[in-house]
Length: 337
Length: 278
Image (cartoon, rainbow over all chains, first blue to last red; front, top):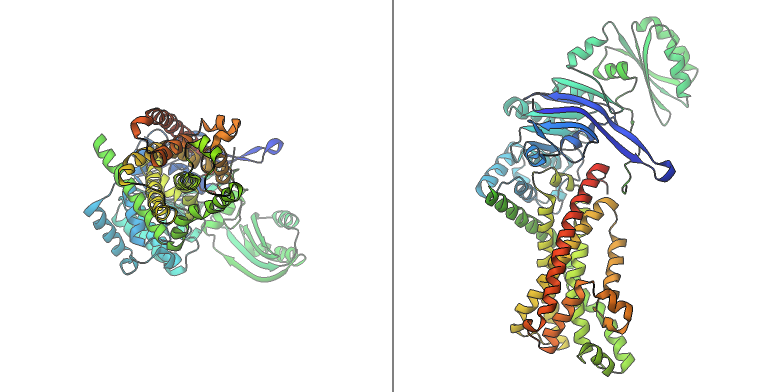
């Protein structure tokens, strides 16, 4: 087993003085990832995905539990564990913008013990592989978001690690670069390279397309771990009614009213400035359609209605009652304890 | 095995120095300003002194310092303090800069100690400050008539190295502190004024009993006394062995303290989960 998490707990302090309290970002998380596996962590923003990745990458120290990488404890044998890990996070600001792409890679190569011809050969190979050769001598500040992410990916691969931790790698990228990164993960890293990949995402399509197994995570807890196909079998003979509406609604009242309709199994409601995305999971949509429309029409203007086969996101709603598009983040940890 | 680790650490330090230099050269005008600012900053004090005593020398000043040359006294203070302030800003602020650039997490996630990277940053800062001071010393020699002969360079560098070893130990602990507090400017400004008040950068601390007492705990005091003794009083290093010994002891305390504090602060930041916060 490449990565083993055993009862990992991570809490963050919030507030000061009498308002001081702790929130649990990871709540007794346990799972293992096998060699060559592409394992997904799927959950909404604030579910605890990044906290887990940071713990595995040795950037955070868990409060309880144990994490091992190839049997090396990430706290007591952190240097050995880090040597096996390549890290890629989302966001443009992870590189030295005043340096060229190549100079960025040279600096990080030194941190991984690469030098001289071996380093230059590796950088050249990665630049070719990621189609960055033409821009290697330009400052990173001139790169597009996608090119910056490619350089970050090259950095993660500099030392040819056995494990890759990819935290929302396609977040904020345009579709073309997202497609490239996804293809690269699947074909190059796992297919040809045989790497073990832990991918966190809140894009269900990404998880569905890439991952062999997916852990659903919500509010710091692992809800379930299965393959995408097994997840979809969780809610057989079920349909999903999707409505897009506009209006100032009482969310709780509408949710309760919809949930009380017979054969409705789960309701998800996301309200962004009176733009409402409603999902109703039911065993037979046909039988509830008129009731749902009547209830919603009393509260908001219906713009579109659609009936779909359940997706991974619907399974997530079915299991957790939370949509992947929701933001469940709490405020940042306090800087000074 | 140990030799390989040392070789790898030296390569990291070299890479850090090259990276820092390349980023500096991206801001060429800023480099020029930092080179001349320490000298410009002291000009008002020179004029102030001139206005007070009607010239560049006074008997009470000579009595306190052993030299009548007030201008040289202040300019030497300005040049040596370049090491201190570049250390505070450069080393103390360096991890905050890495956080701002978003690169700190990638350094920490690599199989290298953050301390090795910080040593690279301190050496880069030392080289940078040395270039600045050479530039300042050239200006001071040409425009203010300060006499730094070739033979004095080695003993001066020896004292400066003794000063910065300890001081950068303190700056490393300060860098760890900034990881936790996420604020640098206010602290650096406060420390700057502590140094200005309690070490003889711009005035002889002997003028006041409290400043004299507190300055005895500041390594910069000993370094400035020794450097001025070499430049202005033509003393040799052998005459200054007691000062060198004190600086050496202070180095050991500050390096050991800096190392312990930094490790504790890094651990605490990782525990608090605030490493990547800006």
